[in-house]
Every structure is written in C-alpha cells, then in structure tokens.
Image (cartoon, rainbow, N blue to C red; front, side, top):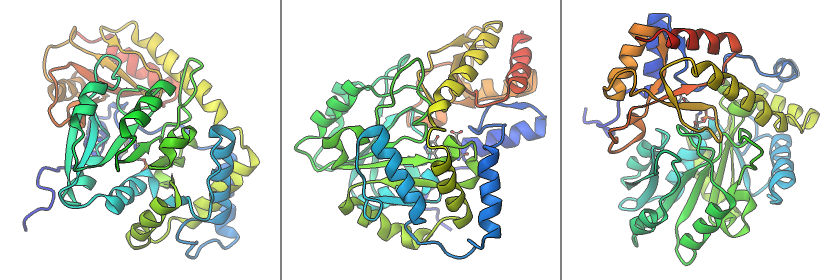
Length: 380
Ligand code: PMP
Ligand code: GLN
C-alpha cells in the first residue's frame, strides 16, 4: 500500500538498541537509565494493582495525579494550573506531543522545528498534511538563531516547537530566550509547544526556564513533561500536558480517541510518590550532574572531544580525531571496533550538517560508564 509516511523508517533509537543487543555492546544509544525507579514507587505500583486500580481511570488522568502536577507547577514555576481544565495525563510525552500537534495544526499549515530535533515531531506534523519548516540551531552551543527563526515565520505558521533541556544537544533556554520568544510570537496566532521532558536535569546551578514561568507565553502554550525521565521509568509511558483551557479542550478531543486513558496503576503510584516525596525532583539535577561529570572525567582519556552539557542526559562528542567519516558510518564502525553504541545526530536533522558528532547517554551506572570509557580509550 502507499505509505502515508514514506520517508519514515524504524526510529534510530530502536535501531541502535537492536544493534547493541546483537553485538553485546555497551548501550549508550537510546536514552534510558540502567538503574531502577525509587523502591517506594515500584512498591506503590504493586499496591495500586492489589488495591484494585485496574479498570479505566478518568480519561484526562487520575485526579490525585493531576493535583500533584498542579502543585509542582505552582511551587516551581509560580503557575496556578487548574487540574480540571488545564492538566491532562497522557501515555508518555510522545502522546501529548502528537495530540497537541493534531489538535491545532491543519492541512497546509507550517510548523517550525529547531534542528537537531527529537524524532517524533516530524511524523506528527506530516500526518496533519502540514509542513515542518526546519530552522537550524547554531553549534557548538546550539542556541537559537533569532534572525533565522524570525525569517522562518510566515502567515501560515501555526506552531513553533521548542525543547528545553534539549535532546540531543543538552542546550537549555534562558530567561532571556523566553523573553525573546514572547516578543517574537506577540501579535501572532502561533501556538508554542514546549517539550520539557528533561525539566529536572539542568546543571551548574542554572534554573530550568519552563515556559510555565512566563505568563505571556503560557497563554499560547502546550507545556509537556514525562515521568519516565523524572522517576527512571521510561517504560511506564506516563506523560502530561499543561495548557490553558481552550488548548487543553482541543488536546483532550484528540486524546480521548487516541488512547482514551493511560495505565491506571502507574498514575496512582506516581500520585502517591509525588505526595510522599515532593522534593524528589530537586535531587535529580545533582544526581545527573554527578553522572555527567563522572562520564566526562572518564572520556578525558579517549580521543573524543567533549561539547558542553548544560542539561538533559546526553553527552555530545566530536569524533573527528578518531575517524573522519559521516556519523552513521562512525556509529556502525564504533559498535564493531569498540563495542559501544551511541546515536548519530543526522536523523535529528532535515539537512544534516557535515559535523562529526555522536550522542552518548550518561543516565547509566558507574560500571556501565566505566566499561564504555575503557573501550573508547582503546580506540585506534
Ligand atoms: N521528547 C523528548 C525530547 C524526548 O527525549 C523523549 C524521550 N525520551 C520524549 C519526548 C518522549 O517521552 P516519553 O517516553 O514520555 O513518551
Ligand atoms: N527519548 C529517547 C532518546 O532520545 C528515546 C525514546 C524512544 O526510544 N522512542 O533516546
């Protein structure tokens, strides 16, 4: 049959994890922790099942969880979001992103995406018969080029997607960036989608500049998070979207026929965990900064050049001193030669630049990072 997404193959994350499995390589490719969620959370999940939370939960999400998300958003960002009309629990951030795009983007619209971009935005845009307009971020800091972004806006621009902290580069938006965004979008009808799944992983004392902190941007924004990152449970697939009532109403129209509701026991367990330890997320920046620093220390003994990592859980490395080949080639070579799997950056681009960059995930135990670094240190 004729494909609706002819340009789309298997996602790079599945490809690289499969490659790691077949080569018994150290997998620093797909972004997931190799340590468990907090015991309290897994116990709460078992209890939720035993307590009978096994039937459909409310489609918009278990009330206790929406209330906890509201409390967190208020405490951290000073935004009072109404759990009844502004917060929706989804099956991972991926579902929230798809539903938000499907809710407001129409055929013929343009959606601005900043490259390199996480891989689920493009297909969701294409399925609305809309067009993704790709604006490159500027290496090595991957900051927004404001002039290029302004130049990309047309009367057909319906949405702009930002991601902070950023996958794959780790770049974070500053308060000044949010101001600039507000200025750029003022007097337009453009909806902002802010993908903030790494919201708690911002390093070196910086503060996560959520769009939820900016009252003007809040009015036009879907702000999306994921418990997969926050509680080391990427396989649970529970995400959420905070958006003003009019946008939430449209997102829910899609959500109720896309999945209707998300895994009930996990929602109860997460609500319990958030109530039990509302400060959990505060420790995450320190925890992941230590992972980052340990990994960088280990990589110093390899021929790889390290880019800065202000946030998220990925280290970008420049491998040009090892081999001057494109990133897909290098990744394949690296698995065979060193038994280490990373992720090439080209799948995150519409037009990949001629960079020599590789993404390595440091959300791993010391033993895993040490094993990877020891193999990388032996590179010819
Ligand atoms: N956005 C970004 C930037 C991501 O890195 C990911 C995956 N880790 C997602 C969205 C999807 O999150 P989820 O697994 O909750 O669907
Ligand atoms: N977000 C994860 C990453 O960037 C992968 C998620 C997925 O496999 N779809 O590696």
